[in-house]
Image (cartoon, rainbow, N blue to C red; front, top):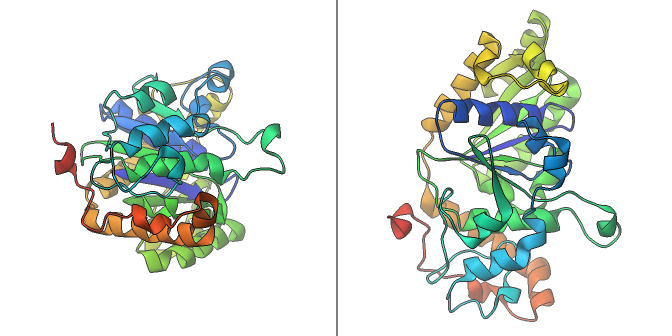
Length: 319
């Protein structure tokens, strides 16, 4: 199952995504985590030191490797250079499982405790004025387009904040999208904006309250969000200790907060995947990007990369 965490900057999106990842891993579930936020704090939130996080290999810097490997011998793709971030898989493409060993995972991902973690890479001085952050996130989008996960595998992505998530088709690549919402009008406004943008694409969007301190906060979130609110996280001494550098077992999180994480997992586990729709939306956004900028950059019609007979399916990589 693929899960995204989105929300207003500063809402606690990375904190909640790290707690959810830790909760799954603590229950013995296989978790592939990807940090696609411009601030790149997920590794530290999961227990890495600052030095380890800075040394982590990035997906963004290995885009040529990712393209070359995923292309495989797909006859519709003339070369790895012809691929863009939205290029969908077709017959001959290499499909990958979240926990297999392959050149992409061996190069770009590392174990962190019981979690397999990859990061897109931070926006640095060399990018100023010449690139947008989505050029780095594109590596993650391309990987997710070719990633075949099963119901007992969890792929969790910490997304960039706010409406920036809509700068590509990446927002359609998930079974459940959790929007982290503080008990403030600004944060609720971000939820409504996200919901408006996502509505036409059938995104399964669920709100989770955060930084809740009292019953007034609960009443506010309940009134503003109604049935979209799955639960909430209260102010946490466990989280505060982690922010001071003291990592505690996830089982020591406050019972009320553990109950919210359990409700989130239950929702994820009962959400079905429509592979045909997943492929269809991937193709839709590829064609949009091809028309908008891809064809001009490639000097070719990238619509020809679409294999109309292909549908991503776990059976294609069984065993």
